[in-house]
Image 1 (tube, rainbow, N blue to C red):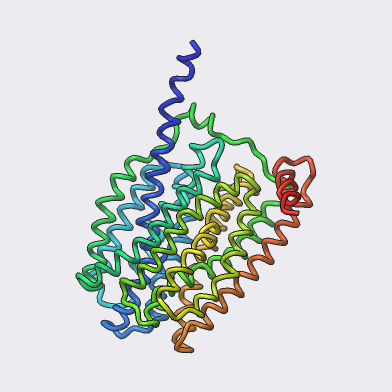
Image 2 (image 1 turned 30 degrees about the horizontal axis):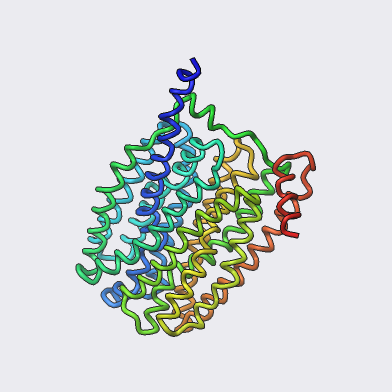
Length: 418
């Protein structure tokens, strides 16, 4: 009888790792293209079409604005219809829009295509996939989220390099078409693998509600303001490191390989900070990653040798990578389950908005000054402002009732740090 009672849980427990792998690959390709895949197209589009760097950066910003707005709506929809249908829609729309970008003849068409790709493509993948992973894991959710987030980091490193190589072989139009077709061929079957856990597995995976007694509106406001600065900083190396390396005489593929090295380190960093969140608490781990990227981001402008870029990029990448993992695990830790989807959607929307704003401002500051010193300097200042807001949030958590389990975990983390 005991064996019979355990048998139904064996398959769901194993299948949760299929969900993790599928989610990792889906986000690697889709978010790799939408978040910073356009970085390889700056110089080719500037040369071929005569557009300014700020105008080109705005293509990426349009995609991220779409991702922010679409994430709220598609996340809401994923709670009410079969999750697989939403994820499949995201895979189809992302691939179709990227393919169509190869046939664009004006900026407004690229703005529109990337906005739709973000809203109905990436927006249908990011929040629903992380929510789905959370439903499959009762313990070790930080590690699982870190692994999926690492998949996104893998794409953010690999896609720009792949785009650069494709541009060298087929031009910018051919590169869009090739990566778009690849997206459809890979992501559609992966989307079909996704499914929600059955009722028994979902019941086993439901975590105990252990959150500090901090008003949810306060958490949402502080985190939303913080991620504007945090992700605005993050977007600067993601979008402009490649062009910065090119200014030092490197080719497009060499510059893309520097980004790849940074994102390979980020893969390890996202997993490591996910595990760290399980050990010391989500908010302390998030603050550690934020401090890391703030301290190191400006140093990119002090390097003028490609070999030094290869050495420094992974150092920066390992720590910066924990930021997105930290945002997601902190939302999970500080917001009650019955409010998490809506509140988390708002916070993530501000995160993508900050991402788009930072990338565009980076291009604008370059056009104004002819260099990247101001761009990376403002990014570092944004990191300081984010840390100030997180400090306020941490103070509120510490002041929550002492008998609250999550608050006690924060206290233990603080005692360990002291």
